[in-house]
Length: 119
Image (tube, rainbow, N blue to C red; front, side, top):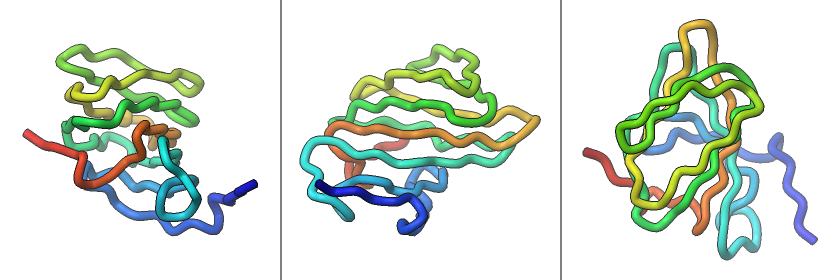
């Protein structure tokens, strides 16, 4: 059994501009097929629009409100909402003006900088 605490992990900034704390991935656990991370984004800020050739993602919004754009379609999200981001789909999340957001990011296969592509 492998248990990690988020408090034992070091946050880092991803290529898309969000601050990520990896909870379980290839760097800190015997992970093979997925990854789990917590991401934060300040009020009025957006990730850089990007896609992943290999990874399918789930975003689960823990705190705040945001706009989620996937392949040109934008919808509002609130805490408790989850969204599927298919592999190959362009996407961007933007925190609203009232406050920051915190979300869980699940990727399969695991997130990697090498699988992140920009316009």
